[in-house]
Length: 107
Ligand SMILES: [Zn+2]
Image (cartoon, rainbow, N blue to C red; front, side, top):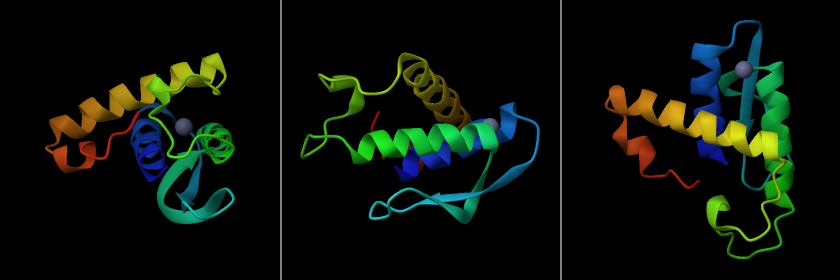
């Protein structure tokens, strides 16, 4: 989920005005942490909290990439949002030569 947090932060930085607060996620933690080196607005924080909660409840082990998942547990609007964030931030990082970050792209 580190990648989703990172990508959401990039997307939020460019596209959302408004107050932002720190966010971080640990794969062992129950949810998002309120501090961290990434910042997102409250709207994006709610989105991340939802995404992390869904992933935590994923019944598959190992977890498939979400686009290959037979369940599609994300709400349709959030799934669309993941796609938007991933493609925007993927392009954004690509233009800045941060290809290294894309190797971890898992959606
Ligand atoms: Zn935002």
